[in-house]
Length: 371
Ligand code: COA
Image (cartoon, rainbow, N blue to C red; front, top):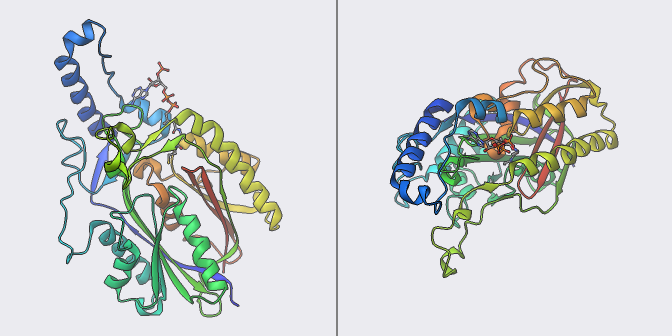
């Protein structure tokens, strides 16, 4: 059976860029209103006053300077502080599928083959728009693809888990070419009234086409894929179909993204660094020869630490790719955006690593070599 090759990637970036300053202006307006409205209770010690946010903190703590969002109007309105994305009729392409299709079409252009040559679609993302039918089947239908399609969710690690799944389909002969899409509307699950996390996420969609090596022209040989999960409550979102069955459930804040950021930082950095080094050793890849690291994009300080541990030295400029300054954390799409934007200069034989990590905990490593 042939090996799998990453044949092409695609990116869809929503048109609305939202800077830290804009985000903080809205947050601080909300804080001011809240503190004013609750002045008496705050003075009596019954309610805690809210603290303002600051662009300086956000950039220093995370490296994030801006993010792209599907809808900006709702996010800059202190009365709303959530995106405005009206429901669409069933006959119309849903928002998440639309973003995925845009990214897929970008990938198809660089693949230079028609969508009809794809025989499986995987939608791998942190948040599906609905329970069913699968987003992937809607994307498959929109692109006129035959075969099969399904959704999978491994939070921020969804894309590497999707790559591994697609590569295994190709290796076992279940498919010759697989489209794997990662539409992420992270603004939909973010609590914009939470000072600790209101700045973290952005919206985007990425696409990866994987193909059997015996028919692929160029692309990226997959040298090895490895997945790891380890249960943790430190990143969690309890939104789900049983919420309506909980008599006390209405309005609880845990139905959006919540995290213990410090703990995540402390626990995930060693877990991921060790996993990368072990995987590299097991498949005979010298990490010192890695030309580029395309890591999950959640926090610049985390990535710098992991980069140093993996390479065993300070990474050269551009070696450890950072796109979160512009895009923020885009969940599963982050490492794929990094890969998509910074691989043009690779020559045959050059090595790189795509790596994701996040809620679960979950982590995935994909070592690639330019063909
Ligand atoms: N503006 C200004 N100050 C803020 C603030 C904000 N928006 N949010 C928090 N602070 C303050 C806190 O009150 C705290 O003050 P104190 O020291 O006086 O108590 C201080 O800044 C530190 O807060 P903390 O939340 O501990 O910051 P941090 O340095 O850990 O950075 C994260 C926060 C979330 C950026 C960081 O922990 C992180 O990125 N962790 C990893 C998260 C991750 O990878 N998650 C995966 C998601 S998929």
